[in-house]
Image 1 (tube, one colour):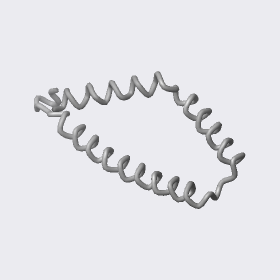
Image 2 (cartoon, rainbow, N blue to C red; image 1 turned 180 degrees about the vertical axis):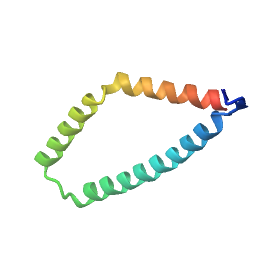
Image 3 (tube, rainbow, N blue to C red; image 1 turned 90 degrees about the vertical axis):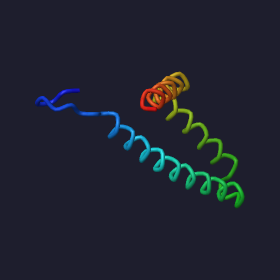
Length: 85
């Protein structure tokens, strides 16, 4: 890309952002895993609460596009990873 007659490499900032985002997501999901393992092992939710939580998760998942949207996002991420190298 040219900006004011200077060539700009946009892939490097995008690659840095994606790597930082991966670290953030990995850390976040690791904390979620520990939290849910603790909840399961301590049996702090009743069966009814667990059922309602799962139902709420499904509603939220569908609001963000459901499985089809998630698969599209994963394909886009894979494309970007291959493009950036």
